[in-house]
Length: 161
Image (cartoon, rainbow, N blue to C red):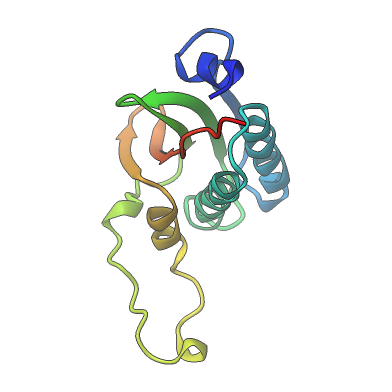
């Protein structure tokens, strides 16, 4: 791990988490993904993990944009990304918060994936994708913060060149 990554994962103040808040509308999605990409690039996250983190953020944020608020009445959405050590392992932690109706995505049953691919229903696979691309997920509902969905992805050991 290079010095920059070591500092980030050692929890020093030189690498604080980054956060963006916006209205839960699809027009904000490029800004949310740009934050994810720039933070991963700055922390030299390997390409596969960066790709996975981008998909996780996209799926989780689109779910909030599509389902958290009544149609035509979008509310706040925030994304925080942080490089940190989790039980001694380097990880990226994504936190998504919204003030929509309380909803625990981790209570969703696994979708039926049997049958021909062209006959499977469209949609409903986002949470499954998040679960498969990440290592830990945690949901809570807080009176002030609203829905808080934390997603952790462990990173592979840094290559020594």
